[in-house]
Image 1 (cartoon, rainbow, N blue to C red):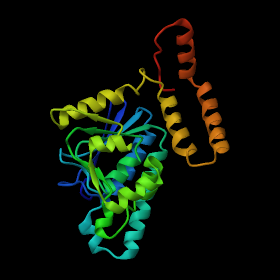
Image 2 (image 1 turned 30 degrees about the vertical axis):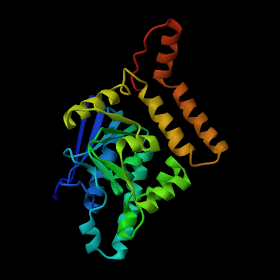
Image 3 (image 1 turned 60 degrees about the vertical axis):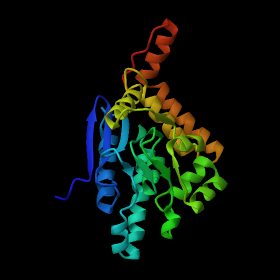
Image 4 (image 1 turned 90 degrees about the vertical axis):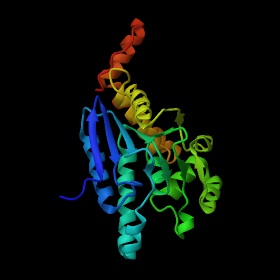
Length: 265
């Protein structure tokens, strides 16, 4: 059995996937394989409604691919390494459960590529920088960075950010549209408590988790296809929700002017 590079824990409807390879939590094929397995475990667990991705420690969320590893392998390995990473992040992106990246430290290079495959990014104020500086290594952001960043901030802004290779603090990242929230916290533990408190609102009975997951799927998939196909996907997902127990609970509670108690079904 190899070294545990990714830790997985599920509690109170929330799965936590922790990238754990100090000091910078840089990923290798082995880490990506373990991350992939953790995503699948959370996907198949009917008691998990929200996934939180974080880095171990309080200095780095993730600094991207392990540079020593990249320098030691041949071009064929590098190609399949990138292909596997693409497939892993696409699996995370298409899992119909809300995924929150908790940026407890620097989130640069492939670390930001990981974070952009999540649905939301919540950062600890003053804890680190965010950016895609791969150009300084003579390469491009090859784990979905060129594609996801262009879709998030617009093509021309994305080109500028990547060719300049600039890193930004989290507040500037929020202005650019890369970060959803920046939280003040005394330390990493306090920050994670706030992240979990935020995530808990999407766990039954607080929120209809199936509706949350279908909203995610409608946006993540629908935004990549022509409008008419996106609308067709939206209708199909809505039809599934209309037949769900939570839709009945929500509609009945509204009529009776009561607070709904959702079940996630």
